Length: 119
Image (cartoon, rainbow, N blue to C red; front, side, top):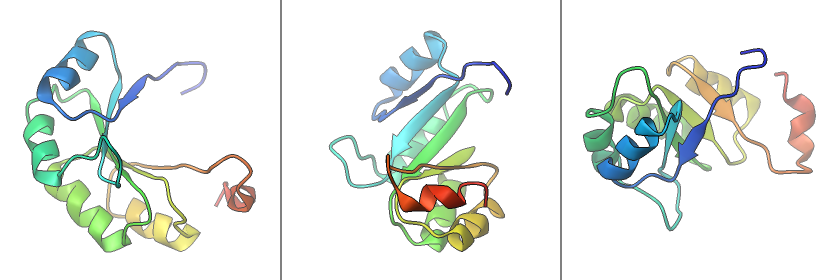
């Protein structure tokens, strides 16, 4: 990506908000499947994702979910990427990456696991 800036709007729960974010230039849209006040059910996310322009990256956000479930939901909804925000191991992250187009692995500030980021 170099010096390009990519804008991801996260926590979307409605088609109207998703389309507004796209209209305002968002490159990626995040849908929280992890417990959160902005959590969305996979079926609701799928209904929104199927109505979005194909060039917008859709991202399912998960935390400490079984890798097999992440892949099942991501592929069922049609997400272009998943973002893992939990304590997923390198092996789990690689397993998911082999089965979905793109994986973003997030680390909390100060997390000791960040030393293995390159893996």
